[in-house]
Image 1 (spheres, rainbow, N blue to C red):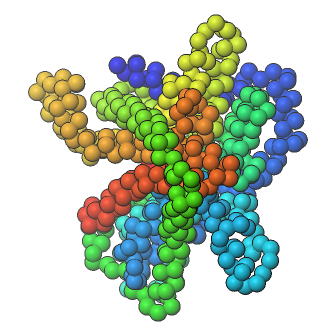
Image 2: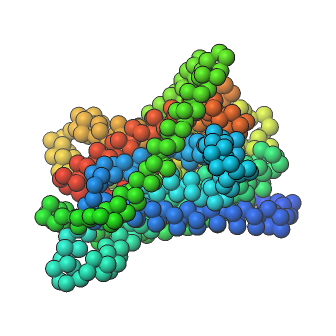
Image 3: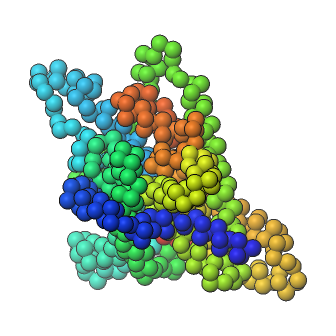
Length: 548
């Protein structure tokens, strides 16, 4: 059983090896292609990706850390609502936010037309949102909850108590925040920033829709437009190295989060109260928390709903509900199957590791955990490129028919990326299960399968359901890998929304976009409830990058 699990985990890690293998098998022509890219497109890809990522990093740091400090350290009107409302943009994929704001702010939008008539002006009232600065703002609105969530967890555990101690020692408010709160939350903030940067680099929907020359867009262009698999693999390898460095930085920051954990401090959190704010200070804190929620969730959802109403009112045949049912069924089928397989694999791996699995399975599970950091474009190249090599070597082998444009290839991509999400949730469930339970069962002579079926499975039911739900939602929102690997006639809601928006049919993109947002709200509600319960009782563990 352990050998089989080891093989499965290594198989799911093959996309990484497929991308890196492009360098090992590169011939003189491939190196010439790389030199040509270095002279032409690579500088633009590197520059735009760097500017986009650094802009997002600065933005999420300011917005996320500011909001976390406001709700954790201060008391002002609306604070209780903002504690959970600031998580709502997690349900909004970046490409859906791009569709909403593009339609609302473009030159021909009712907003600009109304303002031009009102003010008597001509021409565009503001720059086109489909630009680098527009993408930075959109990603900040979508990804700041990473920093907010981690920073709030760190600040909520000990910051209030330490700030109270600093106040009793005579430190002023400015000094308490700069010398106590911010150093305490710095590892959490950096971990959240690293996660946001990885998500930005992995994006394809916004980059393609806005026409940005990023690495993800370049990989798709090299593969699908130029039909050059080697060039796509080389670009994917560069992107993979950058993501690996960011992942290492994020994990280093996560290890440093442990110094903020304090059970006794959390248990007496009610003894120290946040600092009350009044007047202009309270208004500033309210605005700091309200603007990200309004711009990142409330207004885009309202605009998408208005677009949907307009589409239903203007369409001669009404909304395409029959086609929407087909897209929804395809999405539910693919996401449900991925959730079932990923959670089942995670249960089997976690159970084997708990019972003292060997070194090979431990290393294979660690390799599997890297999959979530891989962009969807890299996954697609990592699957298709080895298939092409095998097809060239054995032309009669049905490799391409199995992995290209089939359910098998798509499930391989989903499991490669999202199995780590399920494994994290199951591991968290096992961490709350005392080892004495297994030891007692072993002393009574109970077999391994019976221990799992009669003891572990009932106690891990909530963790398994959470793992399946997280994988389901992440799979539903996945765009790049689905766009390339999906079977014929299996367009998901994400693919349909992207295709409509690419064809400037934003009204028709509203219906699948709203459906994605509605499903994405489920894990956000779960996370909000978990944070609320941890605030009332034991401290919650600091979330990792796989908990989206």
